[in-house]
Image (cartoon, each protein chain N blue to C red):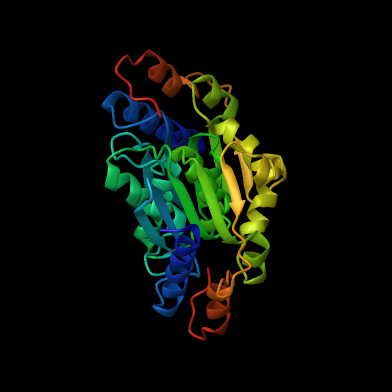
Length: 160
Length: 160
């Protein structure tokens, strides 16, 4: 498939999410070696899942397809510039490239929070709209690093 | 439950993810009206899902519990400062507050990409490690805004 065909595919997925009533106007696919290995359309409202963005679903489906938690060498095509959550998902999946059609300004014009969330992430945690607090406790027994120590000591861990 | 008990709970979830071999050293819960309505532990490697972070799972479980895609008034407790993907999930879920134990520097010291991904999100798309490209095509028929037009025209849409 050409790049244009792939972009047309994600735009069609986005339109279908709207007309079917399954979610917002967003679609995505993951492509590996010229083949679509994962598709996603937004399903936030139909699945009552705020993380059910097209890119997250496409990444999850692609990982299920290849049976691995990394998508090395894959390209993520999206109908719109990924929001910070979806961009983070792309980084954790270690895709090679992201190609998108509309951008965050277009999403904002259509009533979505993408640009707002990008702006919030740039702020210091104590200056964000969602109060974000580092818990500190001088009382004995509070040990924020205990999980990380266990992790470091675990010999058969699978890194990601 | 006191805040200290909730933090101890997420730290225990994080430790259990490691010792069980189900994933990385991260745990989270969503609390609404003093009650835990969603729990999550990292399961990236056991579920082959790079989005299976503790916070994402806790948010999804909480939304399933209340049957809605928003968690207004809820507090997200996490064993570590949420990565950009999880912070984005918290914003989309519209939680009221986030409380975390360890921070992104601790995560980096333990070998995780959290701080790196925060740094990447601050960069312009064309300067990121993952090549991020806005597709443009002067050929007829390319219409990046078609999904958003459909969305705007849809009268019975559920906004999120």
